[in-house]
Length: 311
Length: 311
Image 1 (cartoon, rainbow over the protein chains, first blue to last red):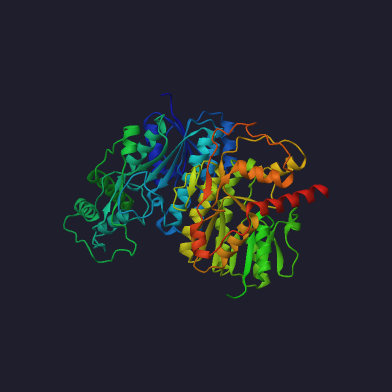
Image 2: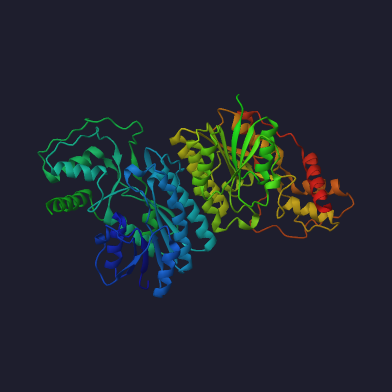
């Protein structure tokens, strides 16, 4: 295919910045949407093929104006921008405000003549399932975040059909990797262990699906460039492991002699005991496969956090 | 139960104004939200128990301010307001802007201490089904209107659970009656027949569910006052008839000698041939029953349009 020119909202985010690196590595061009005064702009790779567009998800008119002045051809539109993605924000009323910006991003993609729009959803759209989840599962979100992502998914599928623009919606399961935000279990665990503290943990019998961030970015890249990708895709490793094992691997990579506090804290009342993505549709349509096993991915994440601590 | 005090958005609308009349007739108090300079304010009944609150769905902060100055107790919040309800607007991008105002209305209902919030959805949330539809059917909307109503439904159910406020979502099927807007088949048919013109029609073999507007308002009233009503309810007659028969009844009420152009126009490419609400949940939970048969409802509608024409 011809050169990829991608517009990316949420470009300075955890997955967004990994996607920028992937597209640059594949000789594509990236137009990265960045907020004025963004604290995270240094997450973006510095490269002649990455151009920063300043703007905010609340004002797509302004973004459109800037792009029209640049006279550029953009063929893939990635919408990863979403306000309130931290664990604490999952039931904040800010969530639903992202729905309209997602719709606006698709309208912009259409007016730019993009052949494809890729948005990112979440396993939270399904609600608690406790088994391997395929895209055919009924969607019963219980958080306002999940309900808002699901709404954005429904609206963009219908609108995409009407505008005749190919839309893809990737439901992201748990990801991890260098640059992830604290507040998520694995990152907090690594920090605690690097500090030689004993982490307080549940019994850890949950089966959990963790995907390394570069694998997630590769999947989004492939979903973007594959002409016939269409509709909802689960995005996870497709291979859940017992949380206890994941935690032990992490500890062993840091210091096998460190103690672990399994059972120190109870499960949450609504604890999901099995979260696993069925990714066969993604593999079938794009040929994607995860490239990083847990040891490698966790090793890189630990190195990154170590370096951050030493700065 | 104690006196009903209801806040109603969309109060000057077709169903909204019928709901205002119903609540007044039941000795309740209505706070009707009306836009400044509304053309439809004369649809509201003039009654000491109906008070107009001026405001717009885009600014719930302003509505809240006014209500807090009035020091009133509101126990039921009806959100019927929605921008772009005409047939021509069904795929306009204005649709999704109603989602956030629906969320805001629920937040306001919660902050007012209402025990119940009732919102109105649409059969369009299901998409084409071609059989009697229960609330358990999968939702596959094909219009942006249907997708937006479905999104509002999902968001308010989840948010209602979290706020611990009882939410009801009534999926309205086809309604008709005095004061309905032109652009809808039955109203246009009546106008054509009253003008002694031969209406151009399809073969009319569709099975269609038509509910008289006062029956729809009664159902919303009952959903509001029934303490244990909760979740999604279909709102229709539950009794579809062949469109040809409905059209013939209408013609016979106006002038049995008038010709009808059945087959003059083709079905739409995506013509739904069977639209019918399963209303057993509504009947079971509230005891509601439709009170107006088609002959009565159509007779009243024809009289109304006749009077309008003679003004």
